[in-house]
Length: 367
Image (cartoon, rainbow, N blue to C red; front, side, top):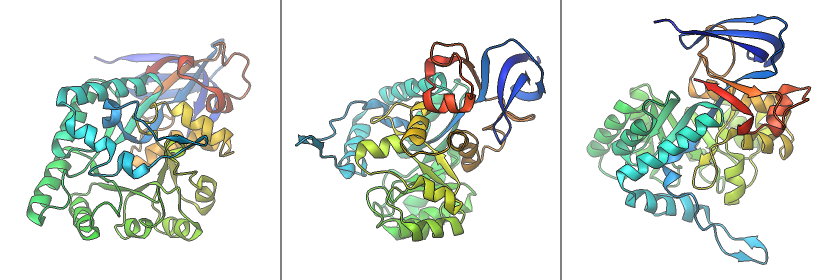
């Protein structure tokens, strides 16, 4: 049975995020028509966010102790928090009962939807069982999920490793590894070879704590790099030359003390940059918070920020019919109340969404 709805308002339209007044027609989950016409609606119709990097398994631990306060400076150890196999998050994940893990992840996924996200990519720990848990958590919620799994023990012999990677890739869209210093590089190369053979994505963290793992990560010819807070000019040029997209996670990097990714320099170099919220144990999954930091702290142009959080996230993840309101695209749309106490009187919808938008401004989500 065909379903169709028409939504009127101010539309953030197309890949350039142009502002037009009119309506969109959605039929069976696809944007069939976008028309310009005068109307009295105060709605702002915008593409949903694409959260390009999460660890929602961390939803079982939302209030970790970050370190002792000494002379008003918090001492935080990133490795102690997240490095496998003994970081705090991995200790918690290994002990968490399966049903609690699934329930916690489902809460975070529902929160993503309520805060305007239409698709996300998750670095899923726990091998094949971890991927199954994510599938169970996301089932029936409508949001698109790119599952990037990883082996439980990437130091085992080749045959066992190969078998586990095949199992993970049978259910996931790719592999998401921790970092080139966390696993023997030769084993990482084997994992990359298996992944490439299956024509799946290979993503890896790099340059978060220091830049010592960047060259190792680049030697793997990844499809995506995460963080790069410590990347220097030469690193960025090499990444741009290899046309490797980067996902930055501003709030996470601040709270772990990793610093600020050189986003402005990445963009100038021609790198495709998307945005993620990273570990749920450190941050909520709201992309509104990431945008506000990128605009107000990093000083990036608002339209560029919005594109990074929508269209560029879709491009980096290979979601070619998502990330913008355009005919024939999937209808991943959020409808905001342009007459909310927060948004009433705005003159520039994109700047207002980026700088001051909040989840409670959302009237409805179509995914």
